[in-house]
Image (cartoon, rainbow, N blue to C red):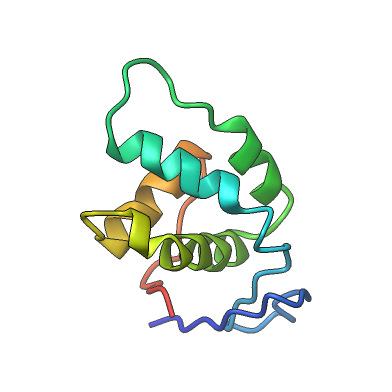
Length: 105
């Protein structure tokens, strides 16, 4: 199983299996909007670009940790919180995958 820590101050994963979010988590609020669109099954294609462009240049583990941060921070706005499914929805929308065995911290 892969464990991950959230470090909102920045920094890379350092090559270990412990991931950190190297992004400003406040900017990732657009990913919460994307998740809301995906969960509400809005007609048409939800706008993925703002969220996906933020996580484009980082490793899948770091992207997963960042998106876990967004999902957990937005828990009050989500009626049906299913962390693994929500994470998969966001990652898939951006063409990314969580590492095998990854669980949000």
